[in-house]
Image 1 (cartoon, rainbow over the protein chains, first blue to last red):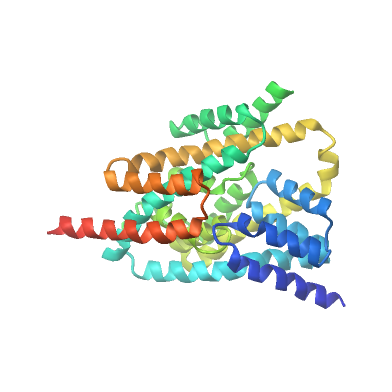
Image 2: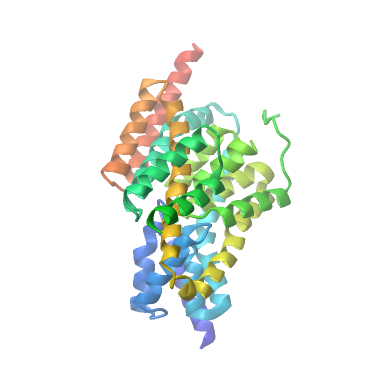
Length: 175
Length: 187
Protein backbone atom coordinates (compact mmCIF):
# COMPACT_ATOMS: atom_id res chain seq x y z
CA UNK A 1 0.00 0.00 0.00
CA UNK A 2 3.05 2.30 -0.12
CA UNK A 3 2.05 3.65 -3.52
CA UNK A 4 -1.32 4.88 -2.32
CA UNK A 5 0.32 7.09 0.33
CA UNK A 6 2.33 8.82 -2.38
CA UNK A 7 -0.80 9.36 -4.43
CA UNK A 8 -2.59 10.75 -1.39
CA UNK A 9 0.27 13.20 -0.76
CA UNK A 10 -0.01 14.43 -4.34
CA UNK A 11 -3.81 14.55 -4.11
CA UNK A 12 -3.56 16.81 -1.07
CA UNK A 13 -0.84 19.21 -2.16
CA UNK A 14 -1.37 19.63 -5.92
CA UNK A 15 -4.85 21.22 -5.57
CA UNK A 16 -3.62 23.36 -2.66
CA UNK A 17 -1.06 24.86 -5.04
CA UNK A 18 -3.77 26.45 -7.15
CA UNK A 19 -5.80 27.48 -4.12
CA UNK A 20 -2.93 29.38 -2.50
CA UNK A 21 -4.02 32.77 -3.73
CA UNK A 22 -2.13 35.50 -1.91
CA UNK A 23 0.63 33.16 -0.79
CA UNK A 24 1.26 29.89 0.99
CA UNK A 25 -0.25 31.05 4.29
CA UNK A 26 -3.68 31.08 2.66
CA UNK A 27 -3.89 27.28 2.52
CA UNK A 28 -2.43 26.55 5.95
CA UNK A 29 -5.84 25.83 7.54
CA UNK A 30 -6.77 23.41 4.75
CA UNK A 31 -3.35 21.75 4.99
CA UNK A 32 -3.96 21.25 8.70
CA UNK A 33 -7.43 19.82 8.11
CA UNK A 34 -6.25 17.24 5.61
CA UNK A 35 -2.93 16.20 7.17
CA UNK A 36 -4.14 16.07 10.78
CA UNK A 37 -7.88 15.46 10.76
CA UNK A 38 -8.49 13.57 7.54
CA UNK A 39 -5.42 11.44 6.80
CA UNK A 40 -3.94 11.35 10.34
CA UNK A 41 -0.42 11.65 8.95
CA UNK A 42 0.59 13.82 11.88
CA UNK A 43 -0.81 14.81 15.27
CA UNK A 44 -1.95 18.27 16.29
CA UNK A 45 1.27 18.77 18.27
CA UNK A 46 3.40 17.71 15.30
CA UNK A 47 1.63 20.23 13.08
CA UNK A 48 2.33 23.02 15.56
CA UNK A 49 5.99 21.92 15.77
CA UNK A 50 6.27 21.74 11.96
CA UNK A 51 4.88 25.25 11.70
CA UNK A 52 7.37 26.54 14.28
CA UNK A 53 10.26 24.82 12.49
CA UNK A 54 9.31 26.27 9.10
CA UNK A 55 9.09 29.74 10.71
CA UNK A 56 12.52 29.57 12.30
CA UNK A 57 14.18 28.23 9.15
CA UNK A 58 15.37 30.47 6.33
CA UNK A 59 13.70 30.25 2.94
CA UNK A 60 10.01 30.08 1.98
CA UNK A 61 7.73 29.56 4.99
CA UNK A 62 5.69 27.12 2.91
CA UNK A 63 8.40 24.50 3.35
CA UNK A 64 6.22 23.18 6.17
CA UNK A 65 4.94 20.93 3.35
CA UNK A 66 8.36 19.25 3.14
CA UNK A 67 8.07 18.25 6.79
CA UNK A 68 4.46 17.06 6.51
CA UNK A 69 5.33 15.09 3.36
CA UNK A 70 8.22 13.43 5.17
CA UNK A 71 6.10 12.47 8.15
CA UNK A 72 3.41 11.11 5.82
CA UNK A 73 5.58 9.08 3.47
CA UNK A 74 9.31 9.42 4.12
CA UNK A 75 11.90 10.98 1.83
CA UNK A 76 9.89 10.54 -1.39
CA UNK A 77 6.84 11.95 0.39
CA UNK A 78 8.82 15.09 1.28
CA UNK A 79 9.88 15.58 -2.34
CA UNK A 80 6.39 14.89 -3.73
CA UNK A 81 4.70 17.26 -1.29
CA UNK A 82 7.17 20.04 -2.11
CA UNK A 83 6.94 19.56 -5.88
CA UNK A 84 3.17 19.20 -5.59
CA UNK A 85 2.62 22.50 -3.81
CA UNK A 86 4.98 24.42 -6.13
CA UNK A 87 4.52 22.92 -9.59
CA UNK A 88 0.97 23.80 -10.72
CA UNK A 89 1.14 27.45 -9.67
CA UNK A 90 4.65 27.68 -11.13
CA UNK A 91 3.41 26.52 -14.54
CA UNK A 92 0.82 29.29 -14.43
CA UNK A 93 3.40 31.92 -13.50
CA UNK A 94 5.77 30.61 -16.17
CA UNK A 95 3.07 31.03 -18.81
CA UNK A 96 2.46 34.60 -17.70
CA UNK A 97 6.10 35.65 -17.74
CA UNK A 98 6.56 34.09 -21.20
CA UNK A 99 3.70 36.10 -22.66
CA UNK A 100 4.91 39.18 -20.82
CA UNK A 101 8.46 38.86 -22.13
CA UNK A 102 7.31 38.34 -25.71
CA UNK A 103 5.66 41.76 -25.70
CA UNK A 104 8.48 43.58 -23.93
CA UNK A 105 8.18 47.34 -24.28
CA UNK A 106 4.62 47.34 -25.64
CA UNK A 107 2.63 50.42 -24.57
CA UNK A 108 0.09 48.33 -22.62
CA UNK A 109 2.94 46.80 -20.70
CA UNK A 110 4.41 50.17 -19.76
CA UNK A 111 0.97 51.16 -18.51
CA UNK A 112 0.71 47.90 -16.53
CA UNK A 113 4.13 48.40 -14.97
CA UNK A 114 3.31 51.95 -13.95
CA UNK A 115 -0.14 50.98 -12.77
CA UNK A 116 0.96 47.95 -10.76
CA UNK A 117 3.75 49.79 -8.92
CA UNK A 118 1.47 51.55 -6.39
CA UNK A 119 -0.50 48.30 -5.91
CA UNK A 120 2.73 46.41 -5.12
CA UNK A 121 3.88 49.20 -2.80
CA UNK A 122 0.58 49.13 -0.91
CA UNK A 123 0.78 45.33 -0.58
CA UNK A 124 4.36 45.48 0.70
CA UNK A 125 3.48 48.08 3.34
CA UNK A 126 0.40 46.05 4.30
CA UNK A 127 2.57 42.92 4.74
CA UNK A 128 4.85 44.88 7.06
CA UNK A 129 1.93 45.91 9.24
CA UNK A 130 0.47 42.39 9.31
CA UNK A 131 3.86 40.91 10.22
CA UNK A 132 4.51 43.54 12.90
CA UNK A 133 1.13 42.87 14.50
CA UNK A 134 1.53 39.10 14.36
CA UNK A 135 5.14 38.97 15.59
CA UNK A 136 5.71 37.75 19.13
CA UNK A 137 8.05 39.83 21.28
CA UNK A 138 6.22 43.05 22.11
CA UNK A 139 7.57 46.59 21.74
CA UNK A 140 11.08 45.42 20.97
CA UNK A 141 9.87 44.01 17.63
CA UNK A 142 8.77 47.48 16.54
CA UNK A 143 12.00 49.08 17.73
CA UNK A 144 14.20 46.52 15.97
CA UNK A 145 12.10 46.50 12.78
CA UNK A 146 11.99 50.29 12.44
CA UNK A 147 15.67 50.65 13.36
CA UNK A 148 16.63 47.93 10.86
CA UNK A 149 14.51 49.47 8.11
CA UNK A 150 16.28 52.82 8.51
CA UNK A 151 19.73 51.20 8.45
CA UNK A 152 18.84 49.30 5.27
CA UNK A 153 17.08 52.27 3.72
CA UNK A 154 20.16 54.43 4.09
CA UNK A 155 22.32 51.55 2.90
CA UNK A 156 24.29 51.27 6.13
CA UNK A 157 23.80 47.51 6.45
CA UNK A 158 22.32 44.47 4.71
CA UNK A 159 19.87 41.70 5.56
CA UNK A 160 22.15 39.31 7.42
CA UNK A 161 23.38 42.04 9.76
CA UNK A 162 19.77 42.99 10.49
CA UNK A 163 18.65 39.45 11.25
CA UNK A 164 21.76 38.61 13.28
CA UNK A 165 21.64 41.96 15.06
CA UNK A 166 17.93 41.54 15.81
CA UNK A 167 18.53 38.11 17.32
CA UNK A 168 21.48 39.40 19.39
CA UNK A 169 19.53 42.42 20.64
CA UNK A 170 16.60 40.24 21.73
CA UNK A 171 18.97 38.00 23.66
CA UNK A 172 20.62 41.01 25.31
CA UNK A 173 17.37 42.63 26.39
CA UNK A 174 15.41 39.56 27.42
CA UNK A 175 18.33 37.27 28.19
CA UNK B 1 18.59 45.72 -27.12
CA UNK B 2 16.24 45.66 -24.13
CA UNK B 3 18.27 48.36 -22.42
CA UNK B 4 19.60 46.22 -19.60
CA UNK B 5 22.80 47.86 -18.37
CA UNK B 6 24.45 44.74 -16.93
CA UNK B 7 25.41 41.52 -18.74
CA UNK B 8 22.99 38.70 -17.91
CA UNK B 9 24.26 36.05 -15.49
CA UNK B 10 24.31 32.36 -16.41
CA UNK B 11 21.99 29.73 -14.95
CA UNK B 12 24.58 28.67 -12.37
CA UNK B 13 25.03 32.24 -11.12
CA UNK B 14 21.25 32.62 -10.89
CA UNK B 15 20.97 29.36 -8.92
CA UNK B 16 23.73 30.38 -6.51
CA UNK B 17 22.28 33.86 -5.95
CA UNK B 18 18.83 32.48 -5.10
CA UNK B 19 20.30 29.63 -3.03
CA UNK B 20 22.24 32.19 -1.01
CA UNK B 21 19.05 34.13 -0.30
CA UNK B 22 17.26 30.84 0.43
CA UNK B 23 19.63 29.73 3.18
CA UNK B 24 20.34 33.13 4.75
CA UNK B 25 16.84 34.64 4.85
CA UNK B 26 16.11 33.91 8.50
CA UNK B 27 12.90 35.47 9.71
CA UNK B 28 10.96 35.24 6.44
CA UNK B 29 9.87 38.18 4.29
CA UNK B 30 11.78 36.89 1.30
CA UNK B 31 10.67 39.51 -1.19
CA UNK B 32 12.56 42.06 0.91
CA UNK B 33 15.69 39.93 0.67
CA UNK B 34 15.23 39.46 -3.07
CA UNK B 35 14.78 43.15 -3.70
CA UNK B 36 17.80 44.02 -1.56
CA UNK B 37 20.08 41.44 -3.21
CA UNK B 38 18.90 40.91 -6.80
CA UNK B 39 17.48 44.34 -7.59
CA UNK B 40 19.53 46.77 -5.47
CA UNK B 41 22.90 45.04 -5.11
CA UNK B 42 23.29 42.97 -8.27
CA UNK B 43 21.06 45.13 -10.50
CA UNK B 44 19.96 42.09 -12.51
CA UNK B 45 16.45 43.43 -13.03
CA UNK B 46 14.93 46.93 -12.99
CA UNK B 47 12.87 48.06 -10.03
CA UNK B 48 9.69 48.67 -12.05
CA UNK B 49 9.98 45.28 -13.74
CA UNK B 50 10.45 43.66 -10.32
CA UNK B 51 7.46 45.45 -8.82
CA UNK B 52 5.18 44.49 -11.71
CA UNK B 53 6.29 40.88 -11.23
CA UNK B 54 5.76 41.13 -7.48
CA UNK B 55 2.21 42.44 -7.86
CA UNK B 56 1.36 39.59 -10.23
CA UNK B 57 3.13 37.04 -8.02
CA UNK B 58 0.81 38.00 -5.21
CA UNK B 59 -2.33 38.05 -7.33
CA UNK B 60 -1.74 34.63 -8.91
CA UNK B 61 -1.98 31.45 -6.84
CA UNK B 62 1.24 29.98 -5.53
CA UNK B 63 3.91 30.82 -3.04
CA UNK B 64 4.84 34.45 -3.73
CA UNK B 65 8.58 33.88 -3.42
CA UNK B 66 8.59 31.04 -5.92
CA UNK B 67 6.48 33.09 -8.33
CA UNK B 68 8.80 36.08 -8.17
CA UNK B 69 11.80 33.75 -8.60
CA UNK B 70 10.24 32.46 -11.83
CA UNK B 71 9.62 36.03 -12.98
CA UNK B 72 13.20 37.15 -12.37
CA UNK B 73 14.77 33.86 -13.49
CA UNK B 74 12.95 33.91 -16.80
CA UNK B 75 14.11 37.46 -17.46
CA UNK B 76 17.72 36.42 -16.83
CA UNK B 77 17.83 33.15 -18.74
CA UNK B 78 14.39 32.14 -19.99
CA UNK B 79 13.36 28.58 -19.06
CA UNK B 80 16.77 27.62 -17.69
CA UNK B 81 16.96 30.80 -15.67
CA UNK B 82 13.50 30.29 -14.18
CA UNK B 83 14.31 26.68 -13.26
CA UNK B 84 17.65 27.72 -11.73
CA UNK B 85 15.99 30.43 -9.62
CA UNK B 86 13.26 28.10 -8.33
CA UNK B 87 15.69 25.27 -7.54
CA UNK B 88 17.88 27.79 -5.71
CA UNK B 89 15.11 29.30 -3.58
CA UNK B 90 13.47 25.92 -2.76
CA UNK B 91 16.15 23.20 -2.84
CA UNK B 92 18.81 24.26 -0.31
CA UNK B 93 16.21 25.64 2.16
CA UNK B 94 14.51 22.21 2.01
CA UNK B 95 17.70 20.69 3.39
CA UNK B 96 17.96 23.37 6.07
CA UNK B 97 14.36 22.97 7.22
CA UNK B 98 14.85 19.18 7.40
CA UNK B 99 17.99 19.72 9.46
CA UNK B 100 16.12 22.00 11.86
CA UNK B 101 13.39 19.37 12.16
CA UNK B 102 16.00 16.83 13.26
CA UNK B 103 17.39 19.04 16.04
CA UNK B 104 14.12 20.81 16.92
CA UNK B 105 13.55 18.95 20.21
CA UNK B 106 17.09 19.76 21.26
CA UNK B 107 16.78 23.41 20.17
CA UNK B 108 13.56 24.05 22.08
CA UNK B 109 15.17 23.01 25.34
CA UNK B 110 16.77 26.44 25.42
CA UNK B 111 14.61 29.51 25.97
CA UNK B 112 17.17 31.58 24.05
CA UNK B 113 16.14 29.85 20.81
CA UNK B 114 12.71 31.42 20.88
CA UNK B 115 14.15 34.85 21.68
CA UNK B 116 16.70 34.64 18.90
CA UNK B 117 14.02 33.64 16.38
CA UNK B 118 11.81 36.54 17.50
CA UNK B 119 14.72 38.93 17.00
CA UNK B 120 15.52 37.51 13.57
CA UNK B 121 11.88 37.94 12.55
CA UNK B 122 11.94 41.57 13.75
CA UNK B 123 15.11 42.22 11.72
CA UNK B 124 13.62 40.70 8.58
CA UNK B 125 10.45 42.78 8.96
CA UNK B 126 12.78 45.78 8.98
CA UNK B 127 14.23 44.65 5.66
CA UNK B 128 10.73 44.46 4.21
CA UNK B 129 9.87 47.85 5.69
CA UNK B 130 12.93 49.39 4.01
CA UNK B 131 11.65 48.07 0.69
CA UNK B 132 8.20 49.50 1.51
CA UNK B 133 9.70 52.93 2.29
CA UNK B 134 11.71 52.90 -0.92
CA UNK B 135 8.90 51.98 -3.29
CA UNK B 136 6.42 53.96 -1.22
CA UNK B 137 8.40 57.17 -1.67
CA UNK B 138 8.44 56.73 -5.45
CA UNK B 139 4.66 56.57 -5.51
CA UNK B 140 4.24 59.69 -3.42
CA UNK B 141 5.42 61.95 -6.25
CA UNK B 142 1.99 61.99 -7.88
CA UNK B 143 -1.43 62.20 -6.30
CA UNK B 144 -3.21 59.29 -7.98
CA UNK B 145 -0.57 56.57 -7.33
CA UNK B 146 -0.21 57.84 -3.75
CA UNK B 147 -3.96 57.49 -3.17
CA UNK B 148 -4.06 54.03 -4.77
CA UNK B 149 -1.12 52.89 -2.64
CA UNK B 150 -2.80 54.22 0.50
CA UNK B 151 -6.10 52.53 -0.40
CA UNK B 152 -4.40 49.14 -0.91
CA UNK B 153 -2.46 49.53 2.34
CA UNK B 154 -5.58 50.36 4.33
CA UNK B 155 -7.76 47.62 2.80
CA UNK B 156 -5.22 44.81 3.11
CA UNK B 157 -3.11 45.95 6.07
CA UNK B 158 -5.55 47.76 8.35
CA UNK B 159 -8.92 46.25 7.40
CA UNK B 160 -7.40 42.80 6.68
CA UNK B 161 -9.44 42.29 3.49
CA UNK B 162 -8.33 39.36 1.29
CA UNK B 163 -5.73 40.29 -1.33
CA UNK B 164 -7.46 38.94 -4.43
CA UNK B 165 -10.54 41.21 -4.55
CA UNK B 166 -8.44 44.24 -3.60
CA UNK B 167 -6.03 43.57 -6.48
CA UNK B 168 -8.90 42.66 -8.82
CA UNK B 169 -10.49 46.07 -8.24
CA UNK B 170 -7.38 48.21 -7.71
CA UNK B 171 -5.08 46.90 -10.45
CA UNK B 172 -7.35 47.49 -13.50
CA UNK B 173 -8.23 50.94 -12.15
CA UNK B 174 -4.61 51.87 -11.59
CA UNK B 175 -3.45 50.45 -14.94
CA UNK B 176 -6.26 52.23 -16.82
CA UNK B 177 -5.24 55.48 -15.18
CA UNK B 178 -1.59 54.98 -16.13
CA UNK B 179 -2.66 54.14 -19.69
CA UNK B 180 -4.78 57.27 -19.92
CA UNK B 181 -1.98 59.46 -18.57
CA UNK B 182 0.51 57.94 -21.00
CA UNK B 183 -1.74 58.69 -23.98
CA UNK B 184 -2.48 62.17 -22.72
CA UNK B 185 1.20 62.91 -22.50
CA UNK B 186 1.88 61.55 -25.99
CA UNK B 187 -0.40 64.13 -27.58
